[in-house]
Image 1 (cartoon, one colour):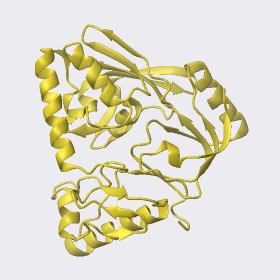
Image 2 (image 1 turned 180 degrees about the vertical axis):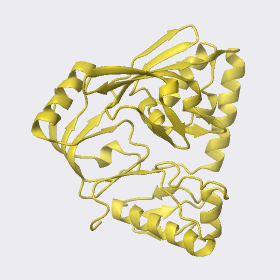
Image 3 (image 1 turned 90 degrees about the horizontal axis):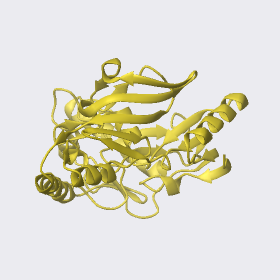
Length: 289
């Protein structure tokens, strides 16, 4: 099973911060995943599942449980317009493969650095497209084994999906459309160029806050609240896009968390709007950071 202890999580997150997990496992197949979950259940250990770590803020003290990294579960099977993928498949890779096969639907999502499992959990979206629009079914490892749920059993919300089971996502089937390869590639390139022009490079976790319903986007609110370029330790609100925090060198989770709190407070004071984080917090952020 390859169970490891006290593994620093900073190396597994795009922000590059975070303390150790008590237990860490990276299953190479579904049997190893089942073995890890059985061990956690017997020992009373809380499992937490990650993919590419692109939307996580891990506490400097780490996580008192078992982190299961799903990235090695990355098989892809294509039958006509039906694309079946394991949870660890990265969206950019999947978008390139399907484009090369003349399958359209993932162009808008090609720049999202996460895995398909994480994308489903958060109903990832960009340029008006959400992953939930493409789902045929999802397989989840539940208490009674693998359970398959059709898309109508799932509730896709803005940056959140309500699933009928709490276990990890194993496999997803997407329904794409046929198209012209060069047109699909061209559209993908166009959107990637636009994304790179508008968003900062470097160590970020993507958008920090969700866009509030019925209000201006979070980036606009944060910009007007004057956080661009604001720095705590090695972390800084991007000067390019205010809804991004960049690890400019040596940042800690505490630095990033303080910036998040400052941004929330300033937007509340200026606009009366409470921003909700899109980033998932892992560890005890209710206590000392």
